[in-house]
Amino acid sequence: MRTTTRLGVATAALAATAIALTGCAAGSSGSSTSTASAKAATGPAVDLSSACPAKIVVQTDWNPEGEHGHLYEMLGPNPTIDASGKTVTGDLYANGKSTGVQLEIRAGGPAIGYTKVASQMYQDKSITLGYMSTDEQVQFSGNLPTTAVFAENDQSPMSIMWDPATYPKVDSIASLGKALEKDGGVVRYFNGAAYMTYLEQSGVLPKSVLDGSYDGTPAKFVSAGGKDAQQGFATAEPYIYQNQVAAWGKKVDYALVSSTGWNPYPEAMSVRTGDLAKLTPCLKALVPVMQQADVDYLKAPQATNDLITKLVQQYNNGWTYDAKVGAFAASQMVKLGLAKDTDGYIGSMDEQRMQDFIAKATPVFAGTGDVKSDLKPSDLYTNEFLDKTIGLGD
Image (cartoon, rainbow, N blue to C red; front, side, top):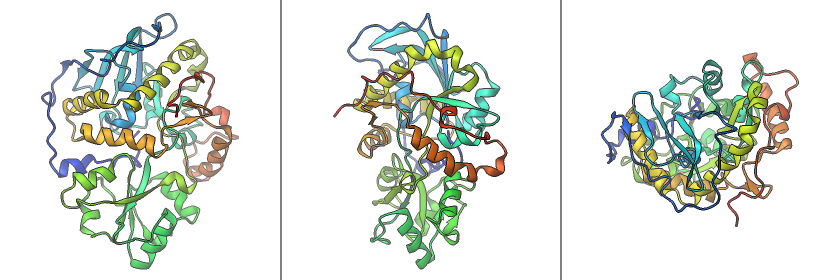
């Protein structure tokens, strides 16, 4: 996923500050021992071999990162890393044991030429599941329909950040817009971001403060000396800018875009809608495994973050990410309620929220010609495969 709204998560920010990563030589491929599954076996064995494909292929929307931790958590020991193909494959584990099938995780974003995940899923039918955010589901619902089966995160980490020393009274995106308009500052973002169209159309941000020139680097934010705001992710930039962007090196404040009413489910595990019936036996067994992996990662992310760091090193495509950022991401996901139990368990989606979002998103995407007429929440998701006993707990 990274759509244009996602590209800025520290890609060039970290590269610009020359963070040195340790571990495997970049660009190599082959087997690599992972500690992601080196945990005490708990719970019964899960057999997916009779219901699922021999290899479950998942297309992500970006390079490996903490927000994808639930996926990499499911990889067993010694996964094979294909550095050139930007994939990692290994036994799919549950409760510390092999499930009898393999899991292949494919990087997105630059690895697939920034192709949208929905498009990639329809071009390559070997993909079992893909990361789909609700906004992209709505946008492509007419020609590339997908159905979400598990929302590992309830809220998006997409945020807008600002300098609290320059704007000490700002406490929301709306108040930030007023302050920027008064002082002549701008919100810098990736041009074409759907959420920004909504913020302008809904009056949350005035058009005069919008600047679609963000390129993923910290340079313009730093050179503005605090006058300008910038898009970012609550799971990355607050840590990166304070600790890893030497030219800034101090706190930033931020507010989640979801607080404005633009509230899609981010990166939900989704299938091609036409394949839902065929995959139902598999999903009944697999989705609870994904739920548990999500819980396990959020409660003990270090080993999986080490694997994510190793993958980033070996993929070696300009993206830089280390386990410290991964630890911050996992902590923020829980602290901010980005990942949380809904309805008493993890991963569920809400019909009314979906309906409200469809109403907001349809006008934003009206010009694309791809939005399904009379789109309903049931066109976009199902909770039928979720295990209501699996959650983060108190």
